[in-house]
Amino acid sequence: MTNPPSRRQFLAIGGIAAAAVALSGSPAFGDALDGLATGRADDPWDRADRIVRSVRRPRIPAHTVSVTDFGAVGDGTTDATQAFRDAIGWLAARSGGRVVVPPGTYLTGAIHLESRIELHVEEGATILFSTDPAAYLPVVPTRDGGIECMNYSPFVFAYGKHDVAITGGGVLDGQASNEHWWPWVGKKQFGWTPGMPTANDAVARLEAMADAGVPVEQRVMGDGSYIRPSFIELNGCERVLVSGVTLHRTPNWQIHPVLCTDVTVDGVVASSHGPNNDGCDPESCRRVLIQGCTFDTGDDCIAVKAGKNTDGRRVNVPTEDVVIQNCEFLMGHGGITIGSEMTGGVRHLYARDCTIDSTELNQGVRLKTNSLRGGFIEDVHVKNVTMTNVADSVLLVDFTYGEGAGHGYPPVVRNITLEDVTVGTAKYPVYAVGYDDDHITGITLRNVRVEKATNPSVVRNCDDVTFRDVVVNGVEVAAPVA
Image (tube, rainbow, N blue to C red; front, side, top):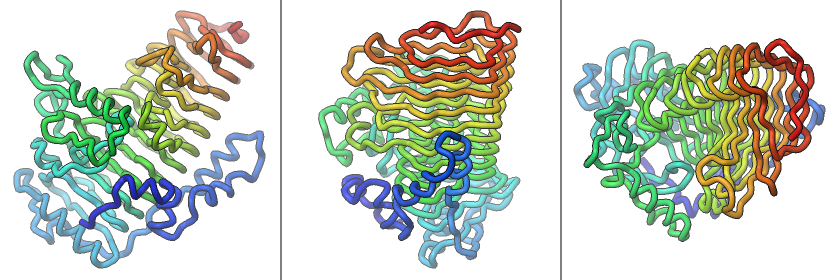
């Protein structure tokens, strides 16, 4: 594997926009986005359609090899780490291609992808990831909770690459459990008992380093930190695809694109109920399409992010132009979530034609932030969504998440629209509370039906709240007075 550019080098060439040019000669972000500026300015779904058409998928050469050609044995016990490394390296030296994982169970440590490589996991195949933390060393540039650091390698990882794909009908099994990885969160329900190590001290140390401006390459975590890696992380990449695979038993966030352009997550089943097992967390990315997926998670199903606090302000790259469509949300905290690590800002997010089927999901649309995050959330549009039940709110805008008020970086939240939404039961149709000196601006509900809500909407410190054809408990209701 060639050495990736350092994070300092990556940002010095203009961040992800310039990296897109450097990696493939393709247009930078601003050029590609110019094509989205045409069309009807008053129709968000026209823009959503154009985003879908604009997202570019990887270009993978026709060369194909099997991981078994390089010594992998699908018996579930023979270590295939070197076989994966050799197969990827062999193809990378020949301009790329597809590494096929045939039926069987293949034990491995970290898999690092190169440009123009597709990891294709056939139906009947399982990649079984080692429970030994040493299998994910040496440390690599990554993010933990929105803060950049050097930590354990994500289980499947690419850094500074282009045209990268993970496809097929097979399974990626992280083997995380109450015996491995999960106890590091320090909670008894995930196997931790008093006296066992946790990541708490390392997380606090990392936050202090970020606040003090310590260079990323000196923020070394890894062995002894107990900070769990993401399962799949594509970092600083262009044209990436995760399609068809099923994820189980993940150590932390399941699919985590960071600083990427042109991200497609298509037909994935993200099923893991451990701590922080978010389904898909695009962070500081542009042009993201998430479609046809099933999320059954131990945390937020989809959580759109953009860095955290001091480090988020340093990197200062938003997530924008995101389309979520035809997805199913089962267990989790929030279905369609933004935050809480959203310091770089999130804008132009569109979710449509989705179902929320579980009685064990807290919020349908969840926006969470505070005055330490800062940043912005703007132009979020949700349409044609059916929610069987949500335990709390159909729409939650939470300014009190984590640190809450009084930290000097008031967030901007504006232009949030829900239309053609049908809900079985909920506690609140809307729960949105801004700060006295920092109001939420522009919440619109159109053609929303809530069959049973145990409480009326709560709306405070909000401006321009509009309800049109909103029916709750069989009665049409007007927008609350904020």
